[in-house]
Length: 303
Image (cartoon, rainbow, N blue to C red):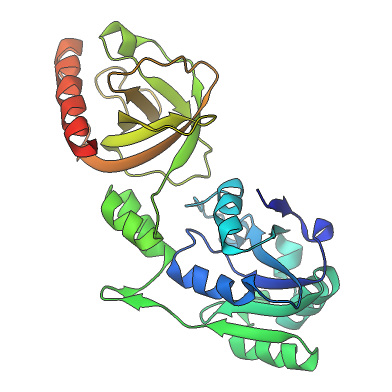
């Protein structure tokens, strides 16, 4: 996997693509492709961490791709390193020229910079492609500006992908991503009620910064992160209205017709299709009967 590092740890000089690139959709890949095969510097993707809006406005910005996931996706694109610029109020106070001089030139020794047409940088978002191009000419740095990519529904954007994912529309999510959405979680101890009613589940602890699909029951593929084989599964995301109405939101995975020792394992999960919303049942037996129906429907979807 490519390295994930700070600007001070980066290999220099760089040819860099600058942006959030959350989801790495077709528009992002177009911007990155420009610098992936250059001989002007080490092909590098540069993003901010945390997201600027988290620092400036206190917003929670869940990610389609966490840094470690993004690094895996960037490697086949010819990128050699992912540089995360720590975003804080001090960085936010830099003018566009100061950011260009101090971070892109001094720290990263940029020889080629690629951005999307809607990228903004510097204090109050004053920097735009025209300003970056001017700064590049003055410093003998090549600047490329990628065009906005559209489909028949409009501009390709991370916000469209997030909306589809929150709605549980994995088909549209995957079309927009250009790949299958997935997430990883660590198996943690639960109350054991699933096993008690005949449907043992792996209870997952997922990084709180990762954007998950909307609540519901899903047909999914899942696997031990240390292996290559995915198995059919049924997954519940959200509250547990029948088992414990007061409990926090849960992520539970049941492998269909497969017994695995998952204690202290990490699982990779690929939700495929939302089967139904969540529902409170009158008894645990009713819940068990419904899970049986869910598992059968999931198998019909997955096989």
